[in-house]
Image: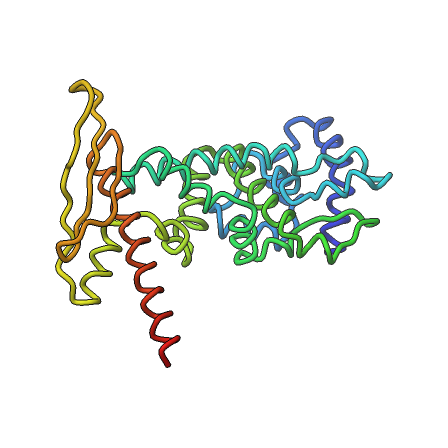
Length: 277
């Protein structure tokens, strides 16, 4: 890490010198500005650097570096973090839009929020070991920052932004697909509340109940802007109701309410059994 710090503090000089030499500032020389372990990481997660390899130094430069007098002019990763956040939103939004064609805007936003948040992004950064590459100001609390959820989330966003600027949207998309969409916990993150109809079917089957029946009990409004109300019956009993502009969404809302009512019934039954013992 000391070598990393030395390369960072010498970066401004190297950049000025190379600009004086014009064409002598070759791609290979600029790539050599990166510490070997960082080049290895970029090769692994982005298939190597593109035309702007030095941007990855910025991506891993914590804002605390700018508070030290001798590196006060160094650019931190905050601007890249801002850009990476927007790239993540775009890629994740498009993926969810295609993956869940029946989902409403609210459901898509809810699922995206489960993925693109501080805790989740810090987890992705942690699984990649990004904390190891962080450059932190000498006067800052190194250990505290390196394990900080905020710093880890920020560096994941800034790395995303760096890949986007260096290699373009498709490279950034590939990175997000590999490190986020392909994450082992992805389905757990997005599926918890996605398909209530499927969950209700599983619930009734596991308890040997008749399958739920969905009935449209009202369709109000003009043809192009109808509002549907759907109710669910299980074992001949009416449970949840849902209202929406699409029948499928109304069914999902009705299934969700039914799941809640059935869970309450089950809880009350368990409580009565416990009190009888």
